[in-house]
Length: 225
Image 1 (cartoon, rainbow, N blue to C red):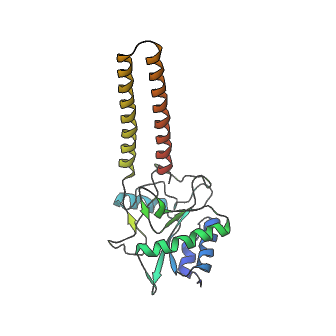
Image 2 (cartoon, rainbow, N blue to C red):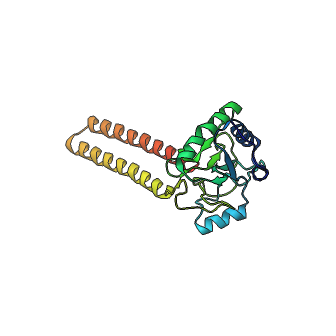
Image 3 (cartoon, rainbow, N blue to C red):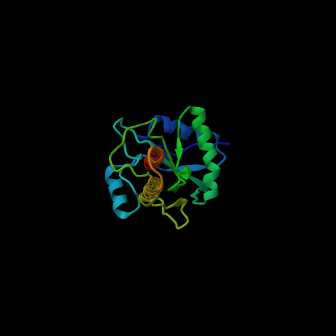
């Protein structure tokens, strides 16, 4: 069980945060699924090209070096007979291996396959909350299904989502809820008089504000990955 990373894998880990490198090393030592490092650090210029081609959704990629001088993401792919495989079941098989390696090393980690809006099978990153330091960009989810050397087939384990559309939908849902509540409050005032109507209106509006605030928090968490 376990295997040694290739010289090319090692080269692609250059500039990646040491904590994440330790996780990849540990995963390779314990894994019964051989894998390769597709990409580690990515230059800003390359990221701009990917965004221009529509191959990436963000300039705020964790692959780009942050102020601390490190990249905070790697892309790993299983190998079958020495060839990269894009079959989703293999990524789900590799997932607990990498997560166990991270736990053994005491490193917090996030898998792109767990994301709600984008599911990016090869992508692993250190979380923003514990490793802050944005490179540059717009705060969208970091999910990039294009790599330097590997062709990307139609069955690539990455499900394209639309975070902006999802965000707009959630905001519209929240505003719709507030509008409905306001209409209900208006009806209460119309049918009632005095302090009872005022109390009803106050309670409804407070509840709407709380719900709207929680929705905004959820949206922010998704946008930061």
